[in-house]
Amino acid sequence: MSTTRVEALFPVADRVSHYNYAIRNIVAEARPLEAAGRRIRYLNVGDPVAFGFQPPAHMVAAVEQALRDGHHGYGPSVGIASAREAVARELSTRGFPTSPERVVVSAGTSEAIDLALSALVNAGDEVLVPMPTYSLYTAVLSRLDVHARFYRTDEANGWMPDLDHLRSLITPATRVLVVIDPNNPTGAIYTPAIRRRLLELAIEHHLVVLADEVYGDLGYDGPVPPIGSLMPDAPVISCSSLSKGYLAPGWRTGWLAISRHHQLDPVLAAIQKLADGRLCSTLPMQYAVAAALNGDRSHQASFRTALRARAELTARRLNAIDGITCVPPAAAFYAMPRVALPPGRTDADYVLGLLRATGVLTVYGSGFGTNPADGFLRIVFLAQPAELDEVCDAIAGFTRDYLNR
Image (cartoon, rainbow, N blue to C red; front, side):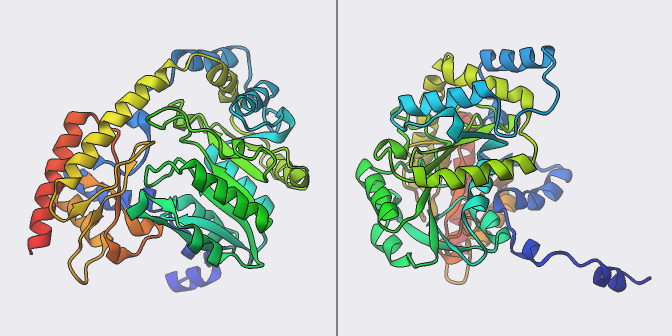
């Protein structure tokens, strides 16, 4: 049987051709270089553990105890009671009142987002997504056959959402407003006034706010309140996890919490039904949720201090390079500089050239939805400051040569 015939008999689903996750996909470009002996500096994935940060010992102890206690089977599809109670208590204390019955434990923030969107939208509906955006949203919406409508965030205004542009995109088919705050990929924190206007627009147009708040503990000036704390009765679904603020991304343990808005009750029931279909998230790690949210968080203060120093170094060094500008981040561990590309060049040309010339792996901005000609890229700055200085030296040298060709 010929290869052509086999491909015709077993076609790949059309949805896969539209499914792209640039943060991971670009690694394929680095592997051959690494196999040939080149040192690759992986600044593409926001994984604190890969750069030496570790979760607090009391969280590890909670998981170890769960394993010793024999928690190796299936758990409740919505999550164990202690985890849901801890999430509800945490959010309520921070001004977003909810109850354990309105919390669902998930396999990280990513699954929480997937569950929420799957419960909220039908094929052909529209979802408002910030631009630049986190790649997960475009991937999930493409799989659901839902139209992403990208609202601008303004680089010249500290990456704040352009509210007039957002309003212009709302149609009768719009169902959800995605808010990523603190933001990935830009590191921005939205002002209280902007956050309130986002909620007001959602209420005015009967939209559900899907609040991606996984970096909420990583504002350099301290934790960022949940957006729902500004209007506790607004239709908000808050998503977070142990991955970032608690330094345990590989544990794949997160949650979503639904506001007390009674008209979200059917959405809660739908999410619970979808959660039943995937049985449960990883059980032993759920026992760390209460330990994390109720226990010692001193690691977060030192982590925020380390991130601030790295953010300041990265922004200062990048802004000193001719042809590069960078808005200083206010949270998380990402910067999104812009390179003044020559005519006809794209962000992918620059990023791949940088990789091949220096071994520094970043992600091109068009992987987050920006125009390829605009020259954006995202850099993860979790490495030690001395290594970040080396990276910036490499970027400076490459950029000088690249722009002078």
